[in-house]
Image (cartoon, rainbow, N blue to C red; front, side):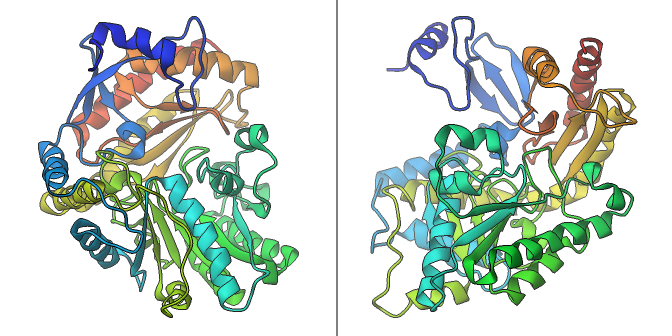
Length: 455
């Protein structure tokens, strides 16, 4: 039985170990009890704009009854059966549909429960693939500085955030770092030429491959728009150069689209937005709009081919990967995308979202506004001219001590993140429009102006 709302916070404080959360005598987590459209409500009846789509997931908005009905219908028919040598109708249909959305010949779909698990699967697949094709020393992976790719031991080794890794070291060996595409903090020689900066960053990938030895590098993991650090889009030509480099050295290109897929940038798969075809795509979150846990790894026919000889298997999986109820919810979610034209809606409104957030650049604390689609980061600075960032104590006091709470109390749920440079991140449901953009900007303006006064 669910505890009454008035008791939920007390029960949580006593028993719930929150994810990425601090705990202490004076910390009581907010209790969120309901969602409808782009808004959520707490147990006191206060409503907030969901400016982060839960956790970059609730693409179609909250309260979609047809998704609950799809889950109930599938549960009545077949609540669970594994994909360990078997298949269920919703899983087969979903795999076919994802292959239809994917570019090129990424036709093979391996289902997982989460994004971290999809990334973990992709690294394991890359290692085994190269063993099967006679290149057993290719096992290393490259990923970008500050990039987040998950929390399991392998995915964490790919993650480029030192602070998240130290508590769990030693990690899986073989993960190496390359520069990201944060043009706001580009090296001085490329600070005024966006395209040249992108090609410089891409060329560092080849440099790392050659330094480590091409016979030891299996894959490069890249998000289309990098999340951590505040939404770094790829400069023009970046992914085309990366694709050339990977082809030249027989390195698999993995497009980690756990956040960017399913309309967050615009298309179903964001690699299409930037004109490249990866060898593997990892995805999760928006596949069900967060209504059920599911993830997926899509591989092209080249990668799948060594496994199609009637005897070789990929000895990897999980109990709930390819869960039929989650697959049914995903299909219903994709029906909403197509019926309501959400991909086109994002494409049509992305420039308005950016223009609305750009108004915040008149504030002294706002250094940069960057992103794509419905996925933006606002980098905060102490000095706009020098781009000086906060000291650790200032970040703790201003971001964690004031800004996160002020934004929430002002009616906006979003993320104030200081795992890299201090940023505020926004990724609202894809059903948002100008009215919601304006409300978010107004709340941000008020809270950021007050934050500046506390520096």
